[in-house]
Length: 110
Image (cartoon, rainbow, N blue to C red; front, side, top):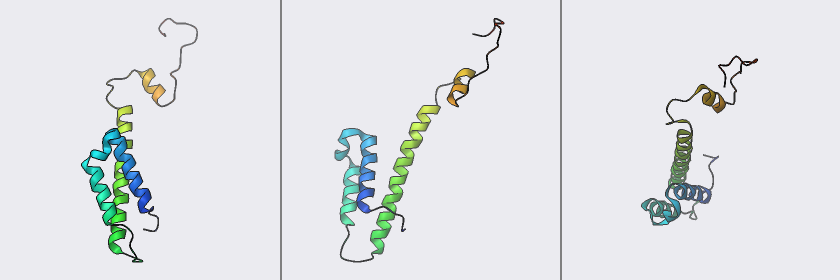
C-alpha cells in the first residue's frame, strides 16, 4: 500500500467523479454526504500506524478507480457502440485507414 495517494487527493478524486456523474447538484446527493462522512470519520489522528485508516484509504482508492473506470468505459461505449451497421468507408476511417480507389475512372467508384 505504499503507492496509495493521500486521503485528501483520493477524496477530491471521488468528489470530482461524483460531480462528473451528477452535475452541479452533486452536493445534495446521498453519495456526497456518505463519502464526506466516511472521510471525516477516518481522519488522521495522533496514531502513527492505524490499520483501520489504511483499510479505509485502500477502500476509497479502489472506489475512486471504479468510478473513473466506469466513466471511461461509458465514454468508449458511447463512442463505438450503438450506431448499427456501418459502411466499409466509415469502419476504415475509425481505425485510421482509407479504402483504395480504382484509378482510371471505371465508373463504379464514387
